[in-house]
Length: 93
Image 1 (spheres, one colour):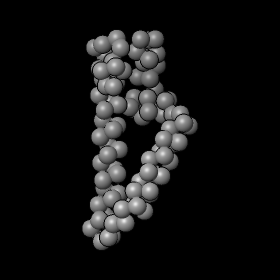
Image 2 (cartoon, rainbow, N blue to C red):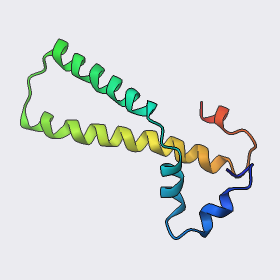
Image 3 (cartoon, rainbow, N blue to C red):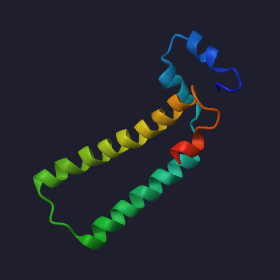
Image 4 (cartoon, rainbow, N blue to C red):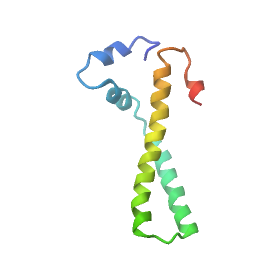
């Protein structure tokens, strides 16, 4: 968006720029990636058969949320590099 000169349009709208950029790049194939990850997590639980306690049950959603935050922070880091570089996609990869 920065190279094409379309980022100014985002800054003029009343919503936050972060929310607009995240919503603009929504793709249905990412739902397949999420379901593949959930399938792998379910198979791991089925094959490992952990002994579930209350602490482990509370730790699992926290672990998933923290992993999502770390992943999104890498995407935000890559987006901020766009202001200084021309092709920042390879830096994040």
